[in-house]
Structure formats: C-alpha cells, structure tokens
Length: 491
Image 1 (cartoon, one colour):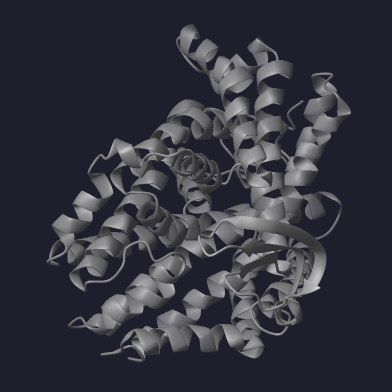
Image 2 (cartoon, rainbow, N blue to C red):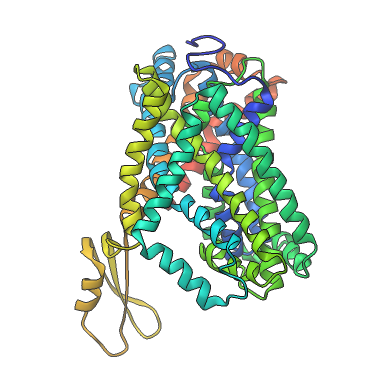
C-alpha cells in the first residue's frame, strides 16, 4: 500500500544521498563517545570482533527490514505501520511499531540535545585554551562546574535544538538532504585529519594493539550483552528514524547494497574514532577505560598537553557535535513527518516537536544538579567487609542524599545506593525497552506477516537463497538476539 514513488514528503535525489542521511542518523555520540569507552571497559580487540559479529547478526537484517517497510509505506512511521498492518492483515498491535518508534525518537531527542550541548561548550573551551597545560583536577572541576549549572546546560540545550530545528523545518530536499550533504563530508574530513594526527603520536601502536589484539579470554556474558546492545543502538534501529528515511528512498535503489554501505561507514567511523582517541590517551599515560568521562575529562587533559592542542581539541569536539547534530535531525523526523501529515506546516510541526522536546529536556538538565538526588527505583544494598551483599531493599522513590544520611553506621558494613534520575529513567525506557521491543516487532512483522513476494519485490535481493537467509534471520535469529538484549536490559 505504497503512496507512490515520492510519497507525501519528497524523495532523496539519489542513493548516495540516502546513504549519507542514514549514516548521519547512525553516526552519533554512540560512535565517538560511547564506542571507545565501552571498548576500553570490555577488553579491546576481542570486544571489537564480537561487536562486528553482532552488527551482522542483529543489526543489518533488522535495519534492512525497517528501511524496506518505510519505503513501501512512503509516509511517517505511524501511518506506514497503520497501512502495512491493514494490508498484510497483521494483528493491530503491530501498529504500535510506528507510535513507539516516534515516541522513542522524541524522548531521546529531549535528552540527547542536553548531552550534545556539552560538545558545544567543550569546542569553545578548547578553542579558548581552557585546558592548556591542565591537570586532572582542572578537567574534573570544569566538567563538574558545567553539570552543576542548570542555566549553562539550558542555554546549550536550547542552542542545539535550534540548530536541529533549522535543518528539519526546511523539508526533505532543502533541509535534510542539503544538511547531510554538507555535514557528513565535513565530518569525514575532520575524522581523516584527526586520524592523520593520531598516526604521528607515540601511542598509535599501543592504541592499535588495544583495539585489535584478540584476547578471547576477555569475552564475557556482560561483554556480549554490551556488544549486542550497542550494535543495535548504533544503527538507529527501533526509533523510527530509519523507517522515516526509508520512506524517502528511491524505489530503484538496492536495499541490500545500501544497508551494507551504511553499516560499513557507521562501523568505520566508530573504529577510526577509537584509533584517534586511544593513541592520544596512551601517548599521555591516561586510562583508556575511563567511562563516559573519557571524552569530557580525560581527552581535554591530553589535548591541553599537545602542541597546537587547542586547535586539535576544538576540531575534535566540532566533529562530535556534527555527529550528534546529524543524529538529532533523524530522530526528530518521524514525529515531524507525522505532524505534517496531520495538517501542520513543516515549520509548525518542527516548532511543536522541538519545543516539546526542549520542555521535557529541562528534566534532564535538572537531573545533573537541582534534582539529582530525587530518584526512582532506588536500591539499597548492605555489604559486608568482603563486598558480599547481606541485604537489599527497593524504594520506588527517594531523596538519595537524605536516604544515605539516614542509614545507620555499622562496623564492617557499607552501603551501596543506586537509583535513576529523570534522565536515567528516560534513557532506560528508550534504550532498554522501547528500541529493543520496536526492533523485535519490526523483525517479526517483516519476517512473518509480509509475504515473500512483497519482500522480494521491495528488497530486490538476489539470488533467492540470499532472500531466504535474510527472512530466516528476521524470523528466528534477530528476534532471539534482540529478546536477549531486552531481558538483559530489564534485569
């Protein structure tokens, strides 16, 4: 039940434009911020190999299905799933794929813009020489001061959403298409320049070995869950963005080749980002598994100690900003496209979506300062001197600071108090529930309810055994892998 070649919103002018747009959606903070530090935390090369296998098993098959469904529907994910569910006589519950994807993208946009705003601040800090010759204390204090200031975070959150909305409001061709054709080449150029610099550092060989030395003994169940989850998350599956972009994809473009190109570019960006970050980290004797602080606390120290480090650091954070910008544009598009179909102008729809995301984002801003102690699902564990859990209790809501102060002081007993802030709850809801569930439903719908003929006509996969293999992956392998992510995330 397609609405025609161009649909109701327009169409990408060529296959490579779609590849750039989809890569822009996939390449974000997850590649440049998250991938290097989870690689550092999970053993380097063995984790990279496991991640690549997960991309092949869980990522590419479902991404192909989501693009295929978007191209067939030619509308926003919400209306596409309403039409496809009716056409293939599937249970009405599958309509929820569109709603859940658009909602996930919208909620992610509300907190993603806050985090992305940090890169704006750090690009300016690097250019101004704030970290020149700085030690760990300065870097830690600078990051803490940024998070402690709700007004600074609000200003950055607002500016980033204005940048995002300015592209979306112009529409598919004047806005999204021109935007990605400008931003993605700029991202690749900055990536190549920084990689060229990393090649000259004394820590490059150590960084390369850390990324690619194969140590199978470091592969654990936890590492597998992290690799599988990140492979799924990094391709923007289950948040409506890829389905929305698929609706603008030319009918004659090869689905398989296009998705492979996107997955390859996305993975290359993540790997090159690691090969930029780790040599700089090792060259300065810093810790590669430093968690999220690797970008905002560890790297500024490294850049501050380098010749021309201000310039190199500023370019790096502009690179991260551009990656975040292209992703934010894509995750806002499903909700904007739906609003346009409901009769709003493109500008009205953009203002409404970005305005509501800005409003909800205030909760994330305050999660780092004013209401950081107001948490839900707070678990209090009593530990003995050996770190063994003696007792555990759950509070649905608590003021964490007051709760810690009320705990009795006992000899050879310590307490571990963990909960979720407003930001933590949104992140958990979208990343651990909505996206995996949406991806699993996409795989099941395309694998079990869309007819083989319809899938063959839309995907154009040849030879027939390749189509059969893809359908088997969608029917069995991918849903099981995603279900594993889903249950692991909940637990």
